[in-house]
Length: 214
Image (cartoon, rainbow, N blue to C red; front, side, top):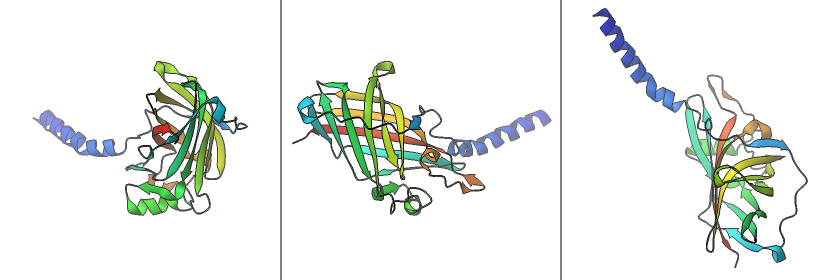
């Protein structure tokens, strides 16, 4: 009887802790980690006479998921623009660039949105734009690609590489990626509360749609 009661208490204890364990999970834990290094000299974008210009449409999204000990929050940017030069229909011969208006940042909590825009995080008044310019796109595993280029964020420029899926269709280009990046690499170092520390890794989520420039 004593053993049975202990089992019941253990089951109840596990049941009560389950939601907390789920809430504490790191959303970036299972994502591939972006490789980050010193900024490389920018590669020349493919020129107009070498390829077909595409522009990113309003169907594109750039988002992120950050987390702390007690849970996670989703966010992203509402305003950004990007261009792709598609050469011979081949992503590996092509290049692209994206510029983000960091003041358009949003989060799933209004108060958090304001905090993320402050000097503790993105410091958008000082750094109102972020940008990525590709330097190479190479075939990767499982039919995907490895994208490398310079990311300028929070006044810091680093070269990053991350896996992506790229599809060239009839009249559009689709590109998607999910990868983890360390915010400390870009001097975003706010630790959070002592009892609720913010994780360094942030999950980046890209879903980009581009159409031929008119």
